[in-house]
Image (cartoon, rainbow, N blue to C red; front, side):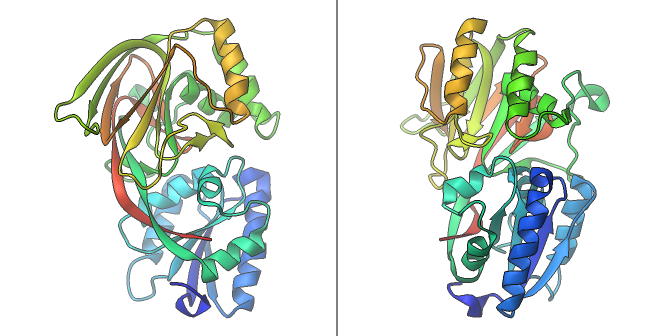
Amino acid sequence: MNGSTGVGSVLMVTNPLSGHGRGQAAGAVAAARLRARGVTVTEVCGTSAAESVRLVRDRLTGDAAPDVVVCAGGDGLVCITLQALAGTGVPLGLVPGGTGNDLARELGVPQDDPISAADIVLGGTVRAIDLGAADAAAPEGGSSESGTAGIGFGIPGPIRFATVAGTGFDARVTLRANLMRFPRGRLRYTFAAVRELAGRLAVPYRLELSGVPGQSVNSVVETEAVMVAVGNTRTYGGGMLICPDAMVDDGLLEVTVVGAMSRRDMVRLLPALSAGKRVDHPALSRYRAAAVELRAPGAPVTADGEPVGMLPTTFRALPGALPVLVP
């Protein structure tokens, strides 16, 4: 699908909350660019994750399916859209407008430049990338002290994600930050992290890894850990390098275990991660596998920054599951 001749219609998904309005503004600029090039643009904007999934799914059925689905927003909006888009064969286009934009960063789609992003939709290269799938347990009662909303996508089965799934401490930080209205931007996550540091850090984790390169049997790891991140891409949260060796098209997930450490060490670790630096610490362990089952008491799960349930959860790599338009 190189060149504008292959794209006649676009479904653009927006969310007025993405990037505190930046996503919707970027979408308007990109839509104007696409229409000026003769492309029919249909816009959808759900009031909830479940409604957005339904609206996208409805547009993808029948003869009027678009040539491309474009997300004008951040990683959370991409995650919502994936629940309807994955498996259809329709390519995804990105117009970054969220807080983190980690998938766009990973794929080289420019941020703060919706015209260039629209031009990639028109003339980019289709690249098949992996997705992750998280089959999580729903929290009892549908909520927790950290604000887990449960599975809110309105679909049965595993939740697909494009960047990183977090469990434990980082998931609690994300969920707390999502509930905060001040401060704005990434500083919310710093404030949320400070609050979460006051609570219990390490809990007993059990990891069962399957499809480990070079191994014919599953590996089981039991350890005390603050958090475990499962990465399809290297970064999340706006460039935090949590899974530095993850590759988006190798059919594997990178699993980063942050083992038990003192609050002082956590306070030192978090700024380095936030700055996008590779962090090596005796308490950090990394694994690569096609699938991993995680168990830990009372640990919430997020994927692409969206709440999806609680542990136990099985994560699987879905090789080549999503065509994406890239430069």
